[in-house]
Length: 274
Image (tube, rainbow, N blue to C red):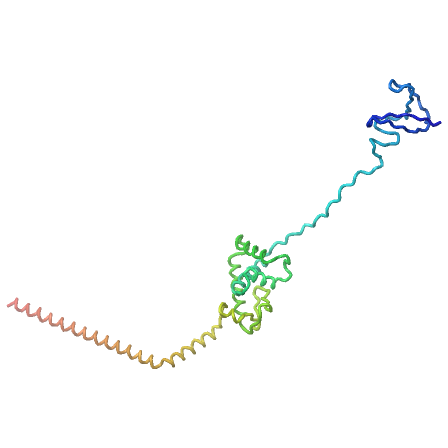
C-alpha cells in the first residue's frame, strides 16, 4: 500500500512531498505536537535533517563531480644560459680592434658586429650589434681577459690588416676575415678601397727589401749631389786650415810674449844685482 507522507525539512523552510513505498518493520511514532495526526516514517538510519530521501544533500547530487580547475597556461621551457668562453671573448676583442684599424662609412658598432658575425655565422643567432657592444664593455670592465691576451689579439688584428693590403683589392662585402687566431689571409684577399688608402695602415716590408731600398736611395742621392758635396767638403777643409793656422799663430805669439817676459825679468835681476 502506497502512502503519502509529509516530510518537513529545515532547508529554506520549504515542505517537500514525496511518495514513499511501504517498508518492512516500519514503526509508527505518535503524532508530534506540531503535526497532529501525521505519521513519520523511520528508515532506521541516522540521517541528518538536511538530507532528503533521494540522497540529495543541501540540493547537491552526491554523484556530481567537483568543479574542474581552470586550465593552466603551458609552462615555458627555461632556456639554459650559454656562458661565454674565453675564445668567444677573444673573438669579440678581435672584431673590435679590426673595426678600429679598418674604418668604414658605417658606425663602429655596426662595423664591429659585421666582422664578428662574418667570423661566427652560427654562434648566438639572437645577438645583435648593441648586445655585442655590451659584451665588449663587460670584457674591459670586469677583466674577462688578461692584458696579455688583449695585447695578443690586438697584435694579431694589426698583422691581419697589414697582410690584407697585399694583393688585389676587393669589396668589403666579399671579404671574410680569418677564423683562427693565428691564421693569415692569402695575398689575393685584399679589401682596401681606393678612398680608404689615406686612413689605412701601411704594410711592413721585409728587412731585406728595406735594406736594398735604403742603399739604392743613398747611392742615387750621392750621385745627384756629388758636386755640391765636393764643394762643401772643400769649404770644411779650408775652415779647418784657417783654424789650424790661427792656432799656430796664437801659440807662436804666446811663446814670443813669454820669451820677452823672461828677458825683462833677467834685466831686472841684473840691475838689482849691480
